[in-house]
Each structure stands twice: as C-alpha cells, then as structure tokens.
Length: 583
Image (tube, rainbow, N blue to C red; front, side):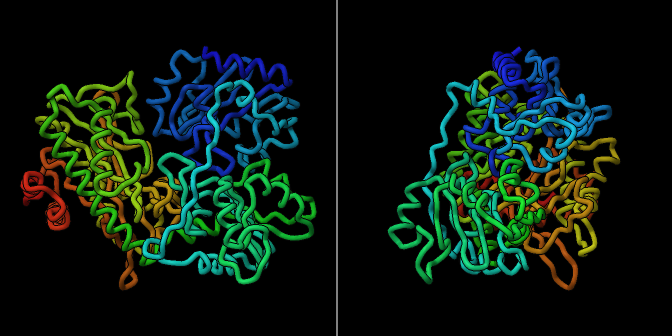
C-alpha cells in the first residue's frame, strides 16, 4: 500500500470521515491542471488526465475510462487501489457506488474541486464535509501555484474583439442579471488573453462575473492587476473603460458572489464546483445550463480559421521532419520513445511552437496499445528497425493549436499489421469524406468510422473525434464524435479530430488522426482536412481500399506534398515525394 493512502486514511479517521473523494480537476473543472492540483496522482500514483479516487477504511478504488484501462492497471499494481473500469459490465458508476454507502455515512471532499452535480447527488442521505482538503494536509511538499504573466493576443488570430464577444454574451444571457464564468478556456477566449498557469494549455486561473452593466475579472497575477490599475481599469470605476471593466484579486470572487442578493445568475452546470454553487445567498436564483461561451468559442470565425490553417502547415513540416529522421535512424540504438518525443518537440519549436499541446504519446509496439501511454525513465524503450511506433502529439503556436497522430512502420510490415492499419485508415477516410446534414449527430458520424473495423471484428474504446480549441485546450466541447454524441450536431466552423484506432494488448497500437474543419455548402455539411502529413505508405494494403478511398489518399497526398514542400530541405522533400506517390 502506498504511504500516501495510509496517511490519508489516518486523516479520515481523525476527522470522522468514512468515505473521501479525490477527483482529478481544479477549482474550474479543468481536464489538465497545474501541479498543485494533482492530488489524485499524489495519492494513487496514476498519472492519467481523467479519474476519480474513492477511499474508505476497507476499500480504495479509481474510476477511469477506457483510454486508461491498461495504464491504470499497471500504475495501480501493488498500491492497494482497485481499478474500476467505467462502463465495464458489473462496474457501478461513481455516483451509484457513492449513493450505495450506508445511510448516515460521512462523505468528505474538497468542495472546490468536486462538481456541483456530484455533491448534490449525495445530499440528504449522507453527512457531507466539503471544506476539508485532506490531501493538502498530508502533502508536505506540495507545489505552489506560481501565477504566470497574462498577455493579450491580437485580432489577426482572434478575429473578434473582446468587447464584441462580451456584447454577444450579454445578448445570450437573456433576462438573467449575472453570469459567473468558471471555465478557464471561456475566460481566456472572452478577453483575448492567455497565460501559462497550466502546462501545455495557455490559460490562467481566473473567474469572471458578468452583468448587463459591467464585468469583473478575477486573476491571481498581481502584475496584471497592477498593469490594469495603471491604465485605469482596476477598482471598478471610470466610464468608457475597455473590457474587462474591473479587475480584482482571484480570491475576492467568493466575497462578491456571496454578497449578491435578490437576483439571478447563470452557472455552467459542468464546471461550477459544489463549493462555489453553495456560496450564493438563498435569495439568488441559480440557473444551471451548459456554458454559453463554450458554445460560442467552438464555432471558429474566419480570422481563427485562417490562423489555424497557418499553424497546421508549419506543424506538418515539423512532423514530417521528425518522421524522416526517425525512419533513417531507428535501430541505431540511440533513439528511444522519449528521445523521439524530444526531437519532435524541437522540430516544432523551429516552426514556431512555444510548447506542446499535451504530453507527446510515443508508444512503441505493445506500448502503443496503451491509448494514452506516456513514456517515463522506467518504461522508455529503444526503437528498433522493426514494428510500429504510435506518435500522438501536438503543438501550441501563436496562431493555433494542433493535434495529430501517425503510426509509423520502422521496418517490414506483416499481413496482419497491414490489414489492421488499412482498416483504421478506412474508418479515418469514412469520417473525413462524410457528407451530412444538420440532423446527423456525433454518434452517427462515430458509427461511420467504426464500420470498417467492425467488419473485421475490431473496435476501439474511445471516441472518434473531440473538439480542438483555438490557442486553448487541445480538447474542447461541446461537440463530440463518439458514442456519447447522440444529441450533438457538428456545426460549421467547429474543429474536430478524426482518430479511429486498433489496440492489441501486448502487441501494438494503431491510430491515425487529422484535424477536420466542418464546412457547409448547398445545405450539406462536410469536412476540410487541416492536418498535413502522409499516411504510412508501407502499412497500406491497397487491395482493401475502394476506388474512392484510393482516390482520397492520392488526392490528400498531393495536397500534403504541394503544401509542405516549400518548407522542407531537399532530402526530406525527396523522401516526401516518394511517400506521396500514387497508390
């Protein structure tokens, strides 16, 4: 058993708590978090980006989804923590498990990081202690949050001023008196501001409280508050100020929302915390709904689209350079999963990326079957001149966010691998070439990508496509192409990934991913591919492709060559010409 788990149980006993919940997120419902908030990782040792830990005196379980089943099983081995595979037969949901605790049990959690919906489903039957950060009490060397500098980005990449965005938000608020913005990506997008408070995601910790007359931005960065004060913004006074009209210290948001009386406030039902939801006076009408701003920012304007197209071209050059280097050096004994990730990162920096958009996944052979594998010093392996390497990576550029996966053959490819790779490619093409109407859902599109795999008895335990933010998180909603997308319609202007896969435990993993822009003409919706990088030619079984599929690959490869050739040195350009030749 991990020492952290024992220490936490000792604290629970001391506080009279029977069950304690440790989620993955921060005060804003974020997927990726600052090191300060990695409490679940600290206690369990599991490093994935999704999962909730539940501890009792005689049980400890980690709930996570299919992306992390293999990784979690390995990292939890010997810890005394049981893996609870979400959605698997016989595994209760987290909420059902908690509600099944003995009546009168004391359930504890830090209400600032537990969702309002989870906290409220436990009310009534249990005594709830929501003001105890027990992990913080045992984590003696916990990292501090060091606020990053907040900076503005220009209209050449945002396509719309913050004043215009705020005006549109107020229109969508309807008759509500206030809206509290809790999601970090929403705040960054609304104000055309960025920061570095979370690794690989250019946001800053903050809240925003918006009314019809003014808006208040709460931030940790004292430098930004001082800068605003010098320009006349701080202190909530003075006419004609540019947005935000008022800037206050981060923690003041709790004072301000608790002081509201006899009014209505819109809250994001998915990101507002249990603690924040309870901070309002009983006279305040709390209106829970999906984020207004998330819905707005998901649909990219022409300026954002033009900017992200530019970013993807440079990103394609970086990835092609890295694959060329990999193909020519695999088997030398000097390249490993981690060194490949470092080389790819350097190629992106040369093309203008200032950081990855997430930790690079470079999974060789059986590691590729771990959907979100992350190499460590203990697991890192040398890359031989054989087998498959799955590389899922992305970059944060000053004009866009990228996400691409390629499965690279480092040597000869046998019949089974060619079959599996081509089946994934067929699913990938099915989505990329789909034409659909406003009636089709994300679930309908997901089925298109799975169909070629299911014909061979294959499938994958994750969604086919997620939204991608613009200079924000690499994962964004509300749109999704997945089994969960039964009520989701893919709107023109949204950017979505296309990434079916096959994962054979102990053997290899295959995934192919491009980013797609939804466009509409003549009442029909379809996709424009934003990503430029050839498919793995050596792994394609041409006889499995239909004529239309072969035509698509050839057309895409011509576009890749035409777009990237001007950015490549001659040896790489010659190699790319070979990779992009007609099938």
